Amino acid sequence: MITNTQLNSSSVVLVSGGGRGITAQCIIYLAQHFHCKFILVGRSEILETEPEWSLGCTDEPALKKRIMQHLMAQQDKPTPVKVQRIYKQLCQSREIHHTLSEIEKRGGKAEYCSVDITDTLALKTVLKPIIERLGKVTGIIHGAGTLADKLIENKTEQDFYRVYDVKVEGLNSLLTNVDIAELKFIALFSSFVSFYGNVGQSDYALANEILNKYAYLLRQQYPHCKVVSIGWGPWDGGMVTPQLKALFEQQNIKVIPQQVGAEMLAEELIQTQSNTAQIIVMSKPISPAPSLITSEKKSYRLYRRLTLAGNPFVYDHVIGGNPVLPAMCALGWMTNSCEQLYPGYYFSSCDNYKVLKGIVFDQGLANLYCLDLTEVEKNEEEITFESLIWSETPKSIPLYHYGTLIKLRKQRNSIPSIGSDVRQIPQTAGDLQPYEQGILFHKPRFQGIQKVIKLDTKEAIFSCYLGTINIREQGQFFTQSFNPYTADMLFQCLLVWVRKFYNLGSLPLKLTSLKQFASLPFDQEFLIQLSIDEHSKTKVVASAIAYNTQGQVYLEANRMQVTASHRLNSLFLNNTVPSNDTICL
Image 1: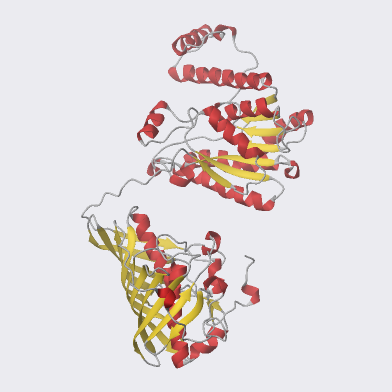
Image 2: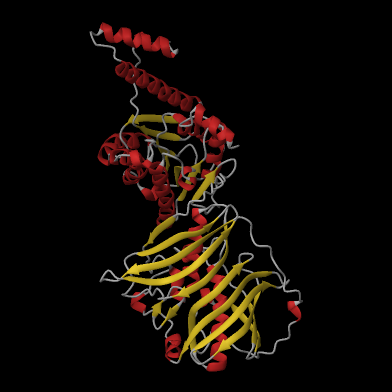
């Protein structure tokens, strides 16, 4: 017998959906290796004694014939619905009895109770005497689930809640009826569908994804307890029918053998070092099917509600005491959305990018922002979108924020080289510190300029390095093929040039074109070379390239334009959100 502080002969594990199916196979395995005690709860009814007329009969046609004979003997009409209901009840009861027997044979102990786990009071009633007999619950395995597969337009509200309640309200009910302080672990049986989706299973995907997020919350609230949500791939059995199994085989996805799945669960439960709240168990990832490109040009309108709390990174991008959305993050929003519409196509370039009215996280923040995407050119190799972000004013007047033309390509652009040894560039700019004395307003998450190597009236070269901004802090503006956080250095370098030669603060206004050859990475040194095209006290225009220390080019920006103003000098110094508006990150 394997001994473990979380699973041993003293453990009392509350298991939903554990009487039958794959969850039952896992419990039998745990019983064999840890000799635990189990409380199995499920909707299926268990017959204390099977009717004499059905004993020993396992063949489906023969058993259904006996059921018909039994109904007729009771002067009851043997309709197909009645016969199927009794047949199903007999099979489920037999399976539960088999599970209980196997647990006992393998050194464990188990009791089963038929109850709707979403009914908190009913669950409390049946659990109380069992817990008094077996002891306090020390672990939970939430394996219950149900399906109501239909296309979303055919789903009813009842379908949704039938699927959702078992997963989410069922977990709430389980937690309500135990002493969480006594729990060593909580294992939630989620599904790969929560990550990949599946036709007809929108409700199942949503319910399991909420289960995943619940795991993170529970881990945070109860650090003494191991919490994990396991996104199981298809098992050999359970809800996977032979037809589904054949479909997975066509996609070269292997089903999980029941013994292997049970072993993986046990390994996860006894692992005390893992800090992962969510895992996916599959033989291979599911690759998106290639998009079928037609000549029809489509239009899309996508909505997004922005919140300050949901986007922590903007606390490091504050002007005049107000967090402001970086221009490159707005561009990232548009490029990400285009890529998501056409998996397998990648951001190649944008043209005529304009900051029309920046988004400020203050009292004027709109309730809802709209992103309009219109296909203007389209073929198998590339797709061009006209992109516009806008909102409505309180008077229902459209307010335009950002606009550009975005080009996606199936093949990534080949990476050019600047053809010189950038490591030999002599430093001539002195000891300029970009993030001091209000030269720039950016705080740590955006402080990527490490050194100003060269700075004159025609040209500038900067060494940059930006550490990873974690996905939680990126909020709604996460990186895909385009990294808006490192790309922000392009405009930052130009802002430094303007401050040096005009002693003025400046902000992005437009960009004639931006071409991407490779994603500009976090955690890696890169250089930005500016060429000043034209300049005055109110407007400066420059072009730039971003490249690595081997001279390979990531980004090429043509005619970046910023607007300069004395007023911005004081606003740059006021780069902290008032304390009463801050949140704990």
